[in-house]
Length: 106
Image 1 (cartoon, rainbow, N blue to C red):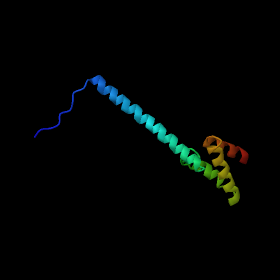
Image 2 (image 1 turned 120 degrees about the vertical axis):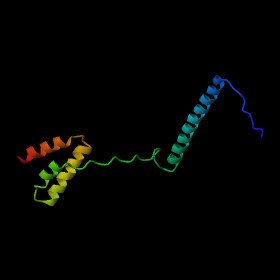
Image 3 (image 1 turned 180 degrees about the horizontal axis):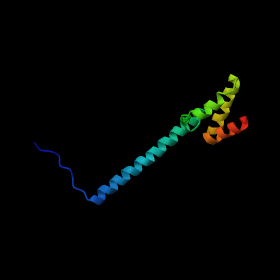
Image 4 (image 1 turned 60 degrees about the horizontal axis):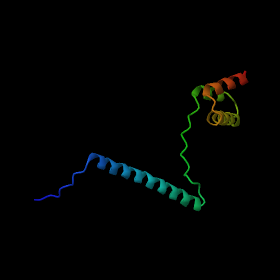
């Protein structure tokens, strides 16, 4: 059985071919990304799909304990919403929010 023999090439020539292949793959990825963005834009969408939101941290039990002391369910829900907004949008630490709520209660 006679097999096909591969030609021998220098290491430098092989490295040049590999570098060219990697460059062409990167350029092809850039063109595909650009075409995808143009296609989305033409359809009235944003250029990039929305990024998934990271899961929200639950309210700590110490803060929940303080909030649960209030009598009205509407007040408790409002306090929880304000605490979440202060933490996630405002960047406040849970301990800071707990301290503020404790000082406001008296």
